[in-house]
Length: 353
Image (cartoon, rainbow, N blue to C red):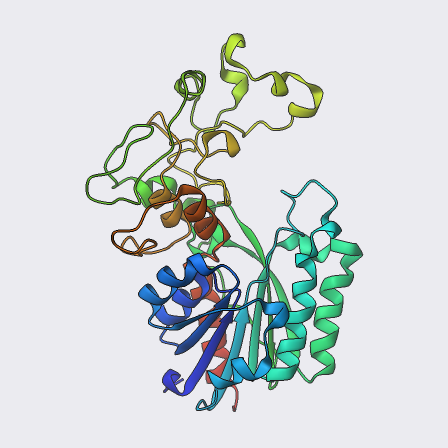
């Protein structure tokens, strides 16, 4: 594909810019990102040189998107609708979370904008949500609008992303079916590991902030949790601890299966899936492999394959852990964005647009 600058990409549900940044790294012209969370404006615009629009997608007009595609020969609309209603981490009544309706709105916007290509990324559990009806409706709506649609389950670790993470990717084109590029890791020994990803960062203690990188900061630990992490082994469980520091909830039958909670990562494996609460030691296997602390926000961003120089906070403004955890945990890994972008680029090279 000779001139990606004649292409316009708009990213809906763009967040802090993971998907956008992947497309930019592959040379695509991303003109705008749209998201309801206005805290994402600075990191999105600063790192991507694209316009951030603070809009509720349920009220978003197709003409707003078209404005940022009007001079392009090829128009691409991409997005990752909020996955919380579909996620296996959501143990309540998932249909009570109205965010699942955003997927229907996304389909309608694709129809109204009529891009040449679209991409939708979400959790694999979407395939089973409401007996598969939501995903089926999404695909059938767009096939009826003239798109040839393909879907894939992506094991992110097979594409050089240093975390065990599975994602659903749906691609559509008016010209032909888009194929996903092949994985780059042929065996588990090729996976990018925790050590490959964060091993070069300076050590910090629980509650500390690195002198050279204010995002390399981690949560404080109380006395009990400090004892717990000191008793934890990389890749182990809370069953390795002395009886007196095991949490009461773990001793109940309902807590017996949550073995990874309060766990340490292993240096020689990918990390677990990053979440919006990945900065908390008690929220999953988010303990550092050898330092007695939870992972830092910078480490979480690196597991999400954001570059080391990716800035999330405007100089002089406060670092709010909860907000930063949400931005990082909700992001599409940058490298997954590159996989999608490369697949689309190859498709464009092989078809007549």
